[in-house]
Length: 251
Image (tube, rainbow, N blue to C red; front, side):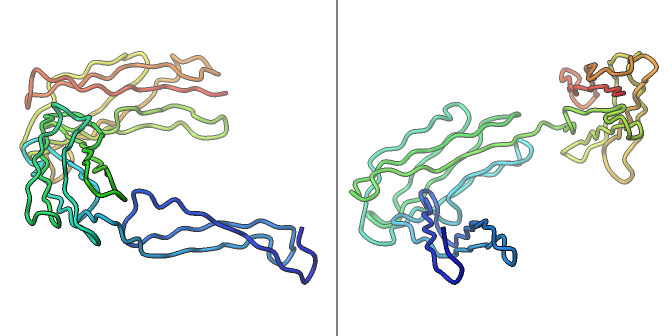
């Protein structure tokens, strides 16, 4: 309790583990002061890591498999010399990597390649060192790898989502990530729940699917009825793309 005209102290502790470079943090103090009910305390500083990762301390792969280029991370000391004794990863069969010595005790180079042809993953490469103050550190690695055809979103909700709102339709976008022409060969879904019309995206290699709910077949007060929309194309006839469609008819 701080009396009128008195003083108080607020102590903030920041966990900077895993950070490097410029860092900004803030905290909000709430009080019953009618003039200043909230006070924002901002903190800014520069974290100088014992071991610095350049140009970034994370590795991320995005895009089509054969367009996901090798990533390079330079590992350098900002203080005392160190050596990397060993490495390990929880992403076996998803990535490959190698460690190269540029200057012993000062500079190492990590090269990471993606092995996944389609799908998402996240994990790390752990490096063990002989530095007493930094015996190990992690390099986070993530991948968001798309196939030739991308379909977004993979979950869509249509219908009367709220009692006082108008009926909401939905759209699904289908694109060729290699910028090649293709055709949608088949759409499979519950025709009693939704109507689907397709149209090409102007000046792009893709289509828009307009999804309209058929609420006459969905009892009023229904929270969710589902249908699975399955999309097939001639770009990869063996591949089937699925979108879960939820139809709602709230009172």
